[in-house]
Amino acid sequence: TISHYEKAKASLMKGRHQEAIEEFKEAIRLEGESAEAYHGLGLAYLRAGDRAKAIESFKEALRLKPDWAQAHYDLGQGYYEAGNYKTAANSFEEAVRLQPDFFEALISLSKAYQHWGQHASAVTVLQKAVQLRPANLDTRTSLGAALVLAGQPQDAIVVLEELVRLSSESALVYANLGQAYRLTGKYQEALNALTQALRISPEDPVVHNWWL
Image 1 (tube, rainbow, N blue to C red):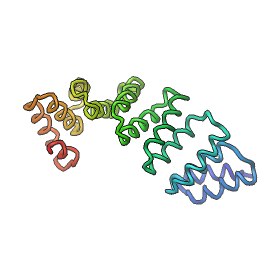
Image 2 (tube, rainbow, N blue to C red; image 1 turned 90 degrees about the vertical axis):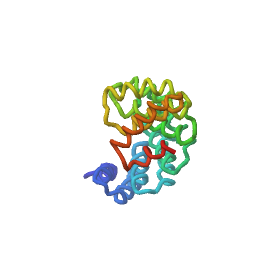
Image 3 (cartoon, one colour; image 1 turned 60 degrees about the horizontal axis):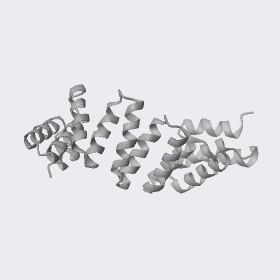
Image 4 (cartoon, one colour; image 1 turned 180 degrees about the horizontal axis):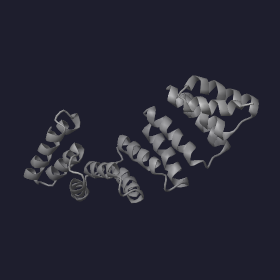
C-alpha cells in the first residue's frame, strides 16, 4: 500500500496542490508528525498561493528539524512572497549559515536585502554567490546592479565592463553600466551605453527608467 506521504509527494510533483495538501495532512494525522511531511505541506500551500498556511507548515517542520537549511529557505520564500522582506532575509540568512554554499539561498537573500533597502549587504551576498558560480553571468549582472544601488559605481564599472566583453547583448548590463558611468561623470560613455541598451531592448521599462 502506498503511504499518504508518498501519494502527497507524487501529487505535489504533478502540480495537484490541493490533493497534495489533503494527503500531507492525512500523512501527519495517520502516519505521525515528521519534518518532511510538514515541509511538503508547506510547499503545497505555497504553490497553491496560501502563504500564511505555508509559513505555519514550514515553522512546524523546523520545530521538528531546526537545522534544516532547505526548510529555512522555503520559509524565507513564504515571507518573501508575502512582502515581508526583513523576516524573509532572516530565514535566508539562517539557511546560508547552515549551508554556506547554498547558492539559491544567497540569491534570494540578496533580493530580500534589495527590497529592504540594504544594498551594501546585497553586494556582499552576491560577491559570495559569484565566487560559488563565477560562470553565472546573471549573478554577475545582479552584482553590477547592486553596486550601482549601493553607491559604488566605480566597482560596478569593473564588473559590468567585464560582462560587456563576455556577453555584449544584455540590455540590463548596458543600462546599469550607463548609470554607473553617469554617476562617475563619464557622460559620453553613459550615453553610449544607454544607447546600446535601447538598441537591444527598445521597449524595456528598466532601460527607459535610467534616462529619467
